[in-house]
Length: 77
Image (cartoon, rainbow, N blue to C red; front, side):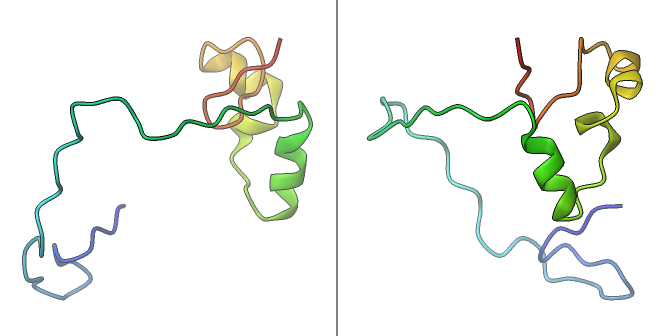
């Protein structure tokens, strides 16, 4: 199930999309930032009720063709 603002559902007819989504600019970003995460960061997110087993359980990660649990697309080496 998904909730998308303005499209209705939950017994509400909706009003359509309010504003169109703008296209991404065709230039380099103004600023980029790179950082690192800790291999145990998913355990901290678990304390904030992120119960996605793909982030914690090795067997679930392997069943989805990952070597180990991921953190929103980040794999650890």
